[in-house]
Length: 434
Ligand SMILES: NC(=O)c1ccc[n+]([C@@H]2O[C@H](COP(=O)([O-])OP(=O)(O)OC[C@H]3O[C@@H](n4cnc5c(N)ncnc54)[C@H](OP(=O)(O)O)[C@@H]3O)[C@@H](O)[C@H]2O)c1
Image (tube, rainbow, N blue to C red):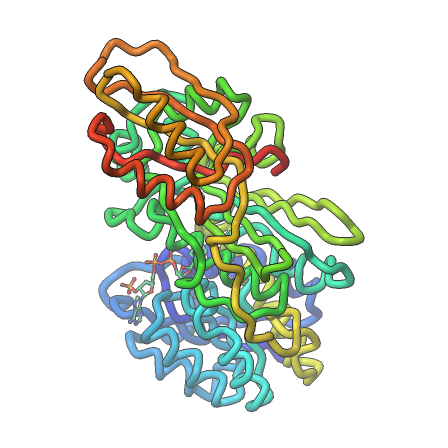
């Protein structure tokens, strides 16, 4: 049986995992497919100066991606370099040449995925992106096919392993954010520049992409309310535990009467909820359908081999389509067309909130804060103060009942002029039911 010939561009973490799985599972893949997968070309910018394992003898090794995309001996192109510039050029060139593309690129697919899907359709090609969100968890397949009969009403995800690792280490060890981040960098769990992970931008791209698949609506990542984890302290976990909660960076998507409500925020979630048990670098997505109700998906969100499994499974799907000469049976976005609709304004989000203050101890603090909250129509649920010796930097917490986000922001802005505050209050959503 003739092989399907694969060209791989990118030989970093995911490229290496993909090459390893194609090599070590070759016989099993062939017995599933009925034909072999053959790697005929591998490219990355510095490939001529480094050793890359699992490249089969006879495969072309080149620093020029064009020698992969335009080659006659490449039927299917894997883009595994990331970013939104060269990767876009590669994918456009491959699709325009009618070649199927497999990519792990959440950033690019969140921004341009539906246009690339249209380009694929126009050229009789296909595009596949399972590895782009939550690495080893096949959440795209689930939304696109597994539960596509349902109407999704919401989902909640822990989609960034680095920030989940940092939060759960702060929680377990009581260490400060900066110390845990430094350890995570030493252990390879966090990048030298951790901005995309700790500010929530990586999770935001993944949320944008999953929301498009779940709800059939175009979502631009920059329209999503996004807050990072830098300000979370061991104190916050102590208070969260006192409230029977923990803190996770939650990607939330909800259908609301005001439109789709999307956010990435450190959030207090009940310790009893299944999401609270997601520890370390693991990812999870809890999906709620109108008919099928709750389903939960858990696994490794990154890493060469878990992500490599997702890439190679996509290669198998694309290769089967090539062999049967079928056009894409199912759009990678699940919906044939994505709707253009505005997201719900974050002003209209409602939630209970956890407000953490640091103050110079003086009289009248609670009265001043309560007055501002009351003026903004916000009702107090509880006031908590754990013992602390430092009267010049005293932490305490007020939790409030469900309130509009806009009212909360007005209250926080009014509080900024209070001279007993050592720093801006930290406001986190406090979920009872997630
Ligand atoms: N890491 C994960 O676990 C994971 C999980 C899910 C999705 N992803 C996604 O998978 C993609 C790859 O991530 P990664 O972690 O494998 O990245 P990585 O380890 O940094 O590897 C990137 C690879 O791309 C090559 N490259 C970069 N710019 C290039 C250019 N302009 N032209 C040619 N080659 C270029 C690099 O070449 P050289 O090595 O030759 O310098 C390297 O081989 C990204 O889209 C990422 O978001 C990653």
